[in-house]
Each structure stands twice: as structure tokens, then as C-alpha cells.
Image (cartoon, rainbow, N blue to C red; front, side):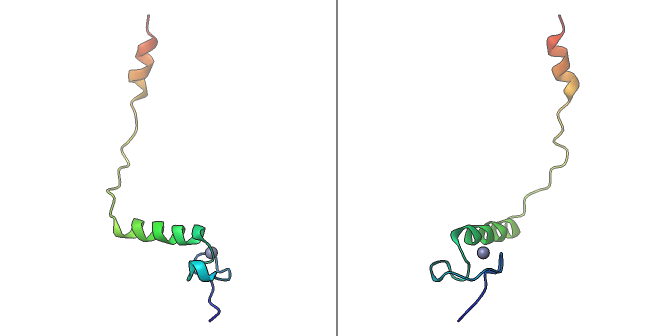
Length: 58
Ligand SMILES: [Zn+2]
């Protein structure tokens, strides 16, 4: 039963099977969560800089 970590391909640790560490286990979990949740892609998050420049206008 010598499997390798699916994240970093290192030797797995029994405690964190099938991963090598809690770090990789969390990485896989976050990947899984990203895949299941469909966040709407918001690419229009730019701030209008001109509005801030007007603040210093004496
Ligand atoms: Zn790993």
C-alpha cells in the first residue's frame, strides 16, 4: 500500500492518507471547493481613479 500524494506526488502519510500532509489535504479540499462552487467571474472591478483625484482639489 505505497501510494503517492496526488498533489505533490510525495509519499503519503497514514495520518493524512491519501495525502502526504495536512497542507496537501487542504490544497485538494480547496481545489474541490473551487470546482463545486461556481463563482461569477467579475472582471469589471476597476475603480474610477478620477473620482479619487478630485478629493485633493483645493
Ligand atoms: Zn503532498
